Length: 299
Image: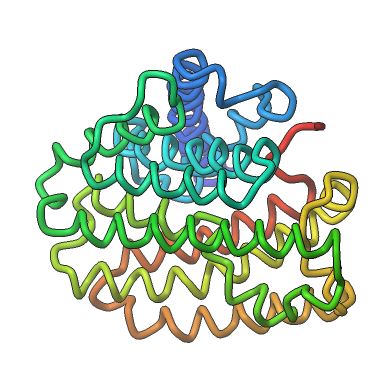
């Protein structure tokens, strides 16, 4: 091997090793969170492989970040997993789902969590970590607004799933379902990460990036649904493939939306180069990951 090629290979693999080391530290932190809040994370489906995949995803999406800088992204992703499991799989009534959302929004606004509510306690931990950052006093209201948007989308999906068991006429159209993609949680995670790492300076800056993230999140919703269709059928979850579109249509829509995202991100690259790269890497990594598997372990 030519010396220059050898040096390039060593440099590349050393960087990959560093990223994996960051992911390993992230996974250990997630394991600590699972141990602290065991009621939130039944195994299955939240197994060690899922925690590893979460930590690897953030480490490869933002390879310029340290493990400490990725802690909020990892923890918010894990909290979304807990919230999604609670509302999708453990709650039997719309009233109980709405009460869970109300409690979480109150905690996000500063309320103390109940002693027996681990979901709210974990959210309070995240809130308190973010509240200690310089940007949170100015941008915390946008973080809370996005949490509300995500949880409202979860409630809407709960209604749709309940309707699916009674009348197919009450199911959403594929376009309405995709418009509700905030329930996936990616934009709330992204906003949390940008505030935690000081990546934005103003409300306008964060709102502009969030708008781009909303479009990226739609692509993630589609590729997730393609990967999880069989599991969703077994679990009774809603999936875009249940709404009158076939797999080829969904794949093409994902491609078209991804192209739209790139065009939306292009003019932002000059003022927010690293955040635009982050969103582009979210698109690329997630598409590649869901091509082979998804995050949840077997139920």
